[in-house]
Image (cartoon, rainbow, N blue to C red; front, side, top):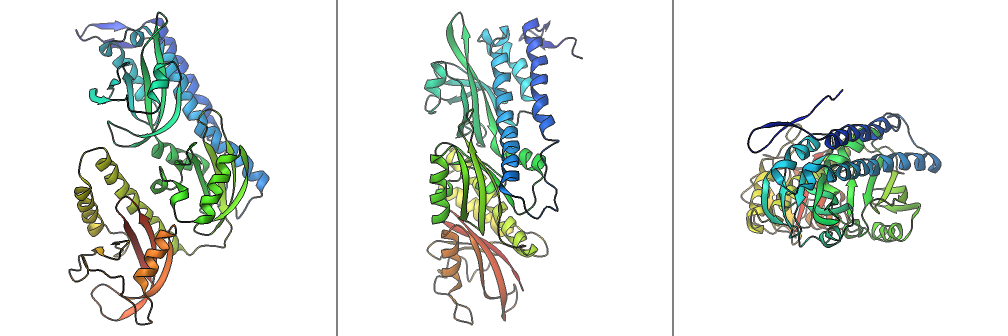
Length: 419
């Protein structure tokens, strides 16, 4: 039981929090309990081969309840903090200890911050950041008194992919600033995946009102626009999902998928959950696809640093190429990258390949495999079979590869295995 919380002022004098702050913290702890409890009742047995659409809707509601519930808890927590004397003082030194305590909770926040009406802001992690929020689409509404629940932005202070939850701070009827939490959508997605415990052939994701991926089982696809992934079927499906409040759809993306979806009012996000209709996928296929998606997510992190102004595009590409060149998995698994024009970027250090246009390369069967790999990547990603020699050998062998397009660099990223 909490008896007291002690804070330090800038003069290092210990003081007790106001009762208002104490009750706010107690209530914050209570608010976190429903979402935690929900996680004990939504998992699907790993051996479950398939479910009907009625069952799928139940899983969808559980999934959305966890996602929306987490955001709502953070929103309510910020509202409670916004009426404490510490926050309403408008003084960073007074409110920082309270916000730091909030940030240490399980809020999945990349940053917790207080913004002034002019857009300058402090974060628990960095103090006065030197950045400004006036160019954020949500900021004018926030300063006019509207809550923010789920706007997707790349964090100015951390470079992470985040969903913004924020509330105005009022004193004597006047808005003096705003409290906000930049929630890591990658951490939330991971939390949802762990709580849902879905089988491997299941997929979950959420789309914001613009059709951008806000949550996804695969980290590499967070913040991506599914309509731009090269699948006409998926692009048409996304438009249908955004136009309706709920429904059931089927589309082709790495196999035929059938999902149920529903829009939820707090964030306005469309939550979806479903399963791949095809049979069992070979474990090697699952492995190479997962490894490519992981590599792409690492490139995405580099790209976000570039967008954040930490480096130029050329520097980001150089860093990304170096990463792929050294990246390994399993028993000698490696990656390669080619531009969409066929120029090789990385092929485990082969000097006779890197920098060369391989578009017209073909295997001993006459397959223009680079063209096929590029086409498959531009169509949304997938598998290609061809003949290619093992590292250090010259005789071609049957190989099956998986590729994805990383649009920011214009690279096709792949890896594979020999049959």
